[in-house]
Image (cartoon, rainbow, N blue to C red):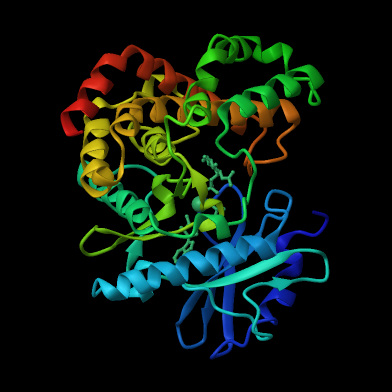
Amino acid sequence: MRHTAEEMLHEALAAWSWPAPVKEADRYGNGHINDTFCVVLENGRRYILQRINTGIFTDPAGLMENICGVTAFLRQKILAAGGDPARETMNVVPAADGGSWYADTAGGAWRVYDFVEGTVCLQEVENPADFYESAYAFGTFQQLLADYPAATLHEAIPKFHDTADRYAKFEAAVAADKAGRAAAVAQEIAFVRARREDCSRMVNWLAEGRLPLRVTHNDTKLNNILMDAATRKGICIIDLDTVMPGLAANDYGDSIRFGANDCTEAEKDLSKVNFSLPLFETYTEGFLKAAGNALTDFEKETLPWGARLMTLECGIRFLTDYLDGDNYFRISYPEHNLDRCHTQFKLVADMERDWDAMNAIVSKYR
Ligand code: ADP
Ligand code: GN1
Ligand code: MG
């Protein structure tokens, strides 16, 4: 996109009828995809204003239809359960023209959410209880959406968690070598190639009808959930851009990838990157407690593969983007995607080492 989000920010702000004058709008959060701003009004009220990454989400209208549909559906369920939908789901604030998003004059797409106050968004697991709560919340999210009319959902990113397709795109990036980096990452390329067969495992089970498609979130990392600042309960699942039909094990697995370790995603010191079986057990217990009765026996049995493959797939995606010249994930320095790739591959190797123990833990809570 030629214009930066900052250049278009004023135009976007003018597209909403704010209940009080805007005091400030600053960059916010740690997402890798969208441009996120926190809008503060003179009366202190806050909102999240986002420019959707239309390089990635090419159909913003379809995307916003998904999000409005899912949040309206969740709102009904939360109300029926006696909950508070203002805090327990996202609320889209319509633009002044009544639309759910605004198309700026440079081709950008913007949307506004109410800011969910009194919450924290964690970048790393601070204590096991938080991780348990996040597991319970993501499991509950899947339960709540179990009867969502999946056929009405637009596929926001086709083949998003088709790991075999991710492998094919990786090989294409190696062959093209657009950024001239392939020779320097021969070891990383070999790591992926040695696991080529693994990449097809879950998609084959899906194709064979052994695993069902469900309505899933598809991006269940810890910083896509808001926890109540006082009780530390996981209350609001955010970043609904990728809600699509998918595999339950992938939602479980992406959370494990991000949270069942003691490092951040771009930790440079790999001696600090260690897969944690205790945190794996904590998440497994919480997730299965919330979602377990909705899952088939085989889905439960394959949860460890969800963890291993989401971690491998994410590492492959970071490496592919590095080979491509960093066009997809937001980076802060040139080697950022490579550092991210290294943490993921270290975690994959740890999971392979701990494979029997992971399966034993899942069996314990099935
Ligand atoms: P990205 O797709 O780029 O990850 P997100 O939708 O996850 O974007 O938003 C980025 C960050 O903004 C989140 O990690 C969170 O800190 C914050 N955020 C997003 N929506 C809200 C909200 N409704 N209330 C409070 N904070 C939010
Ligand atoms: C992106 O949008 P964000 O930062 O929550 C990405 C995920 C990756 C993740 C890795 C739409 O998530 O798939 O797992 O980065 N989202 C998209 O941190 O590609
Ligand atoms: Mg996010």
